[in-house]
Image 1 (cartoon, rainbow, N blue to C red):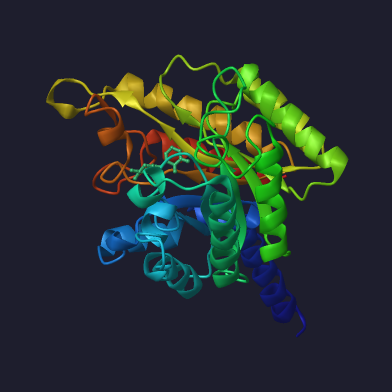
Image 2: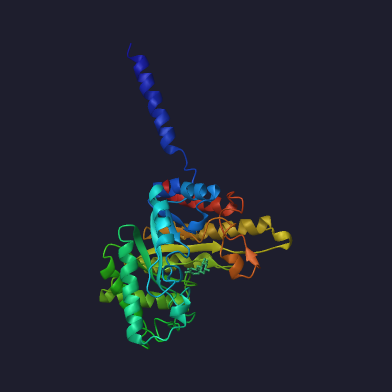
Length: 355
Ligand code: XIL
């Protein structure tokens, strides 16, 4: 009499085990299981396109505004703050249970004309920046969990770049290296003490002069108690001959300081062939670069987020940035079909979740 019950129980547990062992079928499922964030930069004007929204909500558990929280959108004129585009992103994320990563508060690019061409003194610049950081971060407090406070402050040799915030005219700390960066982090921490604060940099993925300078700056910040939580490594990979072997050691030395690393702007652009198509070989080699980068992140517990800069080749900054010579940089094609790069990302994130 008890036999059938045991059978039922046994078959139930077999079914349950099979269900739990089923491999994740989306990036988001794999990432949730691995306890990692997988994100994409987004444009709120595209949320009305059903395939765009559906793919985004299905595949990612984090979004970041591609432009919507930058100065040139939020501060079209000096006296007002326009949060409409950023708010749309927050609303989309909340509706789909996603995190929002903020980008960016201090950068020498993507500033409005009135600021870039204005004739302000250093005191005015300092006031403008402090007010901006406080207003924007307080508006999004509790909604944006992490911010790129300062973006791309260094040149390829690791020297501080000319910038309205550093020396043109700067906020009063010109010639003092990282002092203006430090000041921005201190204001950001005051504005929203709960937000994670990141320094975000381009072309500092491997070991080179620039990544050495990033490392030296953030190490000094950690030692002196400057409020910084992490480093964003952009990862706009410009070619298929990119050496990925030094990414892991770079992530390792940064996380060894007690900082998190986020891969913030991953894309791997391809040369556009005649007819606008990409060779099978190139797509495969692209996938291997994606694989190596995602692996370097997931194998280090301090690397807590992987984000692509857009997600469909239909909408990517690479086209205009390369004047139409490169493209195909993202994990989904123009029709929202997953590419080999997508499969590589999924496999590597799922590997971590199955540990
Ligand atoms: C790019 C956006 O994708 C474009 O839409 C915009 O015209 C220019 O900026 N590094 C960054 C991003 O930190 O903010 C940049 O985004 C790409 C390079």
